Image (cartoon, rainbow, N blue to C red; front, side):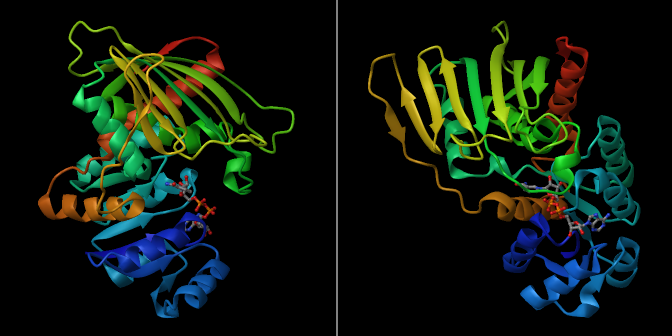
Length: 334
Ligand SMILES: NC(=O)c1ccc[n+]([C@@H]2O[C@H](COP(=O)([O-])OP(=O)(O)OC[C@H]3O[C@@H](n4cnc5c(N)ncnc54)[C@H](O)[C@@H]3O)[C@@H](O)[C@H]2O)c1
């Protein structure tokens, strides 16, 4: 499969390596609006200048790719994806699908109209700890989950678009954790109630800290009560950080599962010893898995696991959280 990658610094630099080692794709063109970023790409990865373009339109005309990798800041995802889809390309975009709900819906509709794959890079699903925690919950040995607590604390100084976003934690980071909630619990959101704030030492313009309460329901829940999930996070934590996956406690009928320091632990009753669960094997992790799944979905003419249509349920959790923060009220998640 012949690809063009849009955005080559930051996460784009990581994707260059992913494309090169994949063996399933040929990334035949690279696009960036900053010429110095394309020069760095040539120096660091030995990419020829002839494969570098300043605009997506030029690359589409010259390379005629089957697919486009969109690795630019969220406010540009819609423009890149829609242009690529209209040119007949399949698209794999970094998360979040887009920076507004309306743009997300527009992109998913455009992909349906074009009959092309539009996939979202929810790479946090594809790590051994997350796969293992999901399997432990799905196996049902602990009974059904009823209460979940997720904590996430980090203090990265990225600079760039995140420092200017109105809701940097919720829109650019928590999308991973909200998508993981759906994936690990096999449940979809029903409602959300949230507050956010910006601690006095924060270096972000928008709120970097939040507490969110989701009510979620499993597809096979029947008359079960909804699962309550509390999420407390900060993206300006000075110390006491968690792993990127966060720390999870999943309380079930007959015990509790934990994700702590990326280890999966279970306890069958309070006071009993914790048991560490060996991590499940995973042939390809993170972005390597995403690219493989993208190629497989295109070849097999099926939707990928993290298609835009599926992702609308995860990104709805993000934008309904923002709606609850801004209104000060609980809101339904459709
Ligand atoms: N999945 C993950 O774990 C993960 C981690 C980091 C970033 N991301 C996502 O990756 C995306 C990019 O983030 P980043 O941190 O790499 O940003 P960045 O600002 O560091 O880099 C973006 C690159 O895109 C280029 N660019 C910007 N607008 C462009 C346009 N319209 N056309 C072509 N090139 C353009 C910039 O010049 C730069 O080279 C975001 O959606 C972000 O949320 C995902």
